[in-house]
Image (cartoon, rainbow, N blue to C red; front, side, top):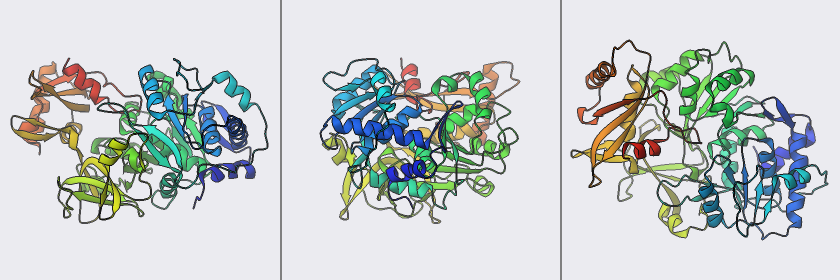
Amino acid sequence: MIRDMITAMDHWALQDPERLAYDDLGHTNTYGDLKQRSDALAAHLDKMNLPAHAPIMVYGGQTFNMMATFLGIVKSGHAYVPIDTHSPVERLTTINDIAQPAAAIAVNDLPTTLGATPVIDAETLNTIFDQHVDYQVTHPVSGDDTYYIIFTSGTTGKPKGVQISHTNLLSYVNWMLSDDFKLPQTPRTLSQAPYSFDLSVMDWGPTLASGGTLVALPKQVTDNFKDLFATLPTLQLNVWVSTPSFVDICLMEPTFDASHYPNLSRFLFCGEELTHATAATLHQRFPQARIFNTYGPTETTVAVTQVEITERVLADYPRLPIGYVKDDTHITVVDEHLHPLPAGTEGELLISGPSMSKGYLNNPDKTKKAFIKMAGQTVYRSGDLGVQLDNGLIMYRGRTDFQIKLHGYRIELEEVNHYLSQEDHIQVGVAVPRYDRNHKVSQLIAWIVPATHDFASELDLTKAIKENLQGGDMMSYMIPQRFVYKESLPMTPNGKVDIKSIIAEVNH
């Protein structure tokens, strides 16, 4: 069991300094490098006499120096706020205003100034990293101190900074290293999610704590399919961490299979719904690999449920479960009045346990609304709808704010997307609402990446899709009125289908 994240990572540097910690397209760094650079930065930060525990903003991409910076910051007793290089400038300045950081570290050159916030620029940082210091870790982040702050996308209004403590992180990482997942002893783990997205903690947390190697896949590679499919087989991965949307892209390449990736033994998914079609295809391509579906809001540290998607699960559940709750955590399904509901009844998921955040940075109002007292303890209102079955498995039913009303019918958009993903002629598809001038939903529109087909026209393809949907379990009022065909769907920097941009374009 890991009792301290910093000690766990330094342990490998002391025991085996030449062990590979990071592989960035063949450019490698060791655990010795990780300790040396993080110690040098921690010593420099100590000399700056920053306010105790004040957060430090970090700007950069998928690089080893980002990891070394994070570790140096927490060694010096501060939390870090990661911001990806593909973030808009406005987001960077907004987060700076909200977080009020003691300093900012530009691992990559900043695209703007940050007012009064002192900045360690990329050149200065590299000079610091070149120093060899004898640093004693005497005042690190520990216990309930905040370890990192990840800003959510902010679907409405300003983004919210989710504070994750060292205790929260330990609860999560120890679960990942438990028999629930049985990860390889020294994993080579895909590091594709940007470090500003909490899915990235699923790759670096358990990997660096257990002496494995993080294998970076930068955005400039993933954005170019030719480069992506040429690079992936060279990475020698044995643990895959991504959103389902990203693996859907990889499955477009016929050679993405066990014979070309013989070491790939684990697939871990989080961040959005894993469809039956995606899991079934993966099972065919990688019959010996273990596939895990997980679920959890950023506010509860990455994930709190898991289930292995076996052939039996695929056979039993047309819409896949999100899993069993981890041992130290409790999920309650409640109605709109927050009254607990019996098994088999749909309601909002309330989550409590040691991986639950203390709340949002400098935002007491939002914290008070989301983190509420129930029966004498604090629980997090997830805003997610779900059902807990008699066997303990939880089924996801969508977002409370992803419900629409069309012609008097209440429709879950994610349920519509589930049926679209099952249709034979659809490779990827999402449904979005179109609003009239009174802001009422007037139409449901599907954006579709079609599977290979022989239809003479899009009209014939649409007719076939609608007939299949009507012949299945889908209620007729849920079937989209319009189908728009695309070569690909827009993606967020975090690797999810960008539903917000589709809604904006549909309602332009």
